[in-house]
Image (cartoon, rainbow, N blue to C red):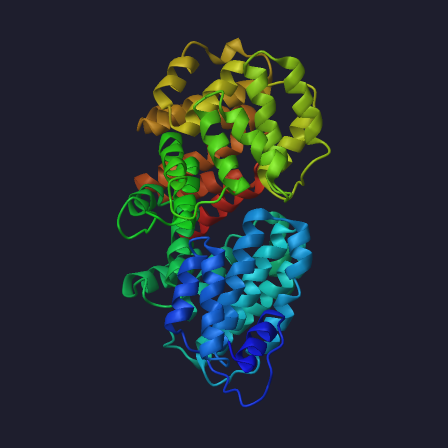
Length: 495
């Protein structure tokens, strides 16, 4: 490699490009596309090689600077390692400075800067740095808003602006201060519509298409409650899960959240056969969770591997919580208590699942075994087995108010999943009546599910009433997730 190009590559990866005779511009070249495709399949070495090749061929291509950030983003979001973060966080400022060398007369300038700030906002949230996340999110939002005014026909703006608009429209209570302080405005339907319009009119050959595809899947699944439509899409040729680790992971993750444990297990197993597969602790967490819902004892091996190898903070408490449950259901109370104690000193409480684990660790009681087994079966999609178990009991068999509320929620969910909406509504109503003043999530979840049923039936006022009832409850467990979905429901219905 000639000395000049060697220096350019070295300077690029240290964040300092030389200013001699360089024409700075934005070009989504063949090598940029290749790097982007590799990063979006978690193939970091191949992506880095393509970026180096592009910088050698075209030292002033600032699109390569932006695409290179995907390596940091994917690595830090998946491994959550504070040491890696400390080594890489300075790339944000360096890359932003480099992008400023480009012309402001092209829409790609603001788009790439907005994408850079948005990705680091995600990373800062992952690291528990919420103020930095909010600041960078606002920078991204403002840049996209300016871009849409200056270049209204620039379709690529819709990818990030659509995502941010949808998310702002359903910000959980813990993050409402961001919206209040920065004066952001959101709309779920309009935001998702922007991304969906882009996906419908572009292909994988176009820049940032994979971003749009993933954002669309999650937003439609969680905020528009189009779960079955999304699941069908994930299993179609439109969603490139075959031979792609990231897209397969997304498919498995959504499968778990759509109560399809068997599909998640099959997808995660297929990933192991893919070219270039490398174990990532998050994969083990997903496998362990899916096997737990199936009540397969092998779940403990995968969850323990996640706890042992993961360098981040999120979902550690939840994994330990699940390990405690596994041993509790197997009758090993000593080992179950061992994991319960560990919850208190490990991980963080930045996500709902970990907050619930922390509350569990701070208590002294254990869940009713039948209710716990039924919960796991429903979460895995094994509804017939769950209903058979629950119908052996009646509400009066449970002493604690929380158990009564949970029993009705679980029975309602099992009937709901089997398509018996009328029966489900009866049990949901009873759960709400019993538990609406409790801090447990059972009544709030019942209200949310009630809203879903009425929305599917087209009974808008009843759905709105249910969503608002959910929002008014003093729930603690899964508060952000449940209330975000309730807010999305109100937003969808124009309430």
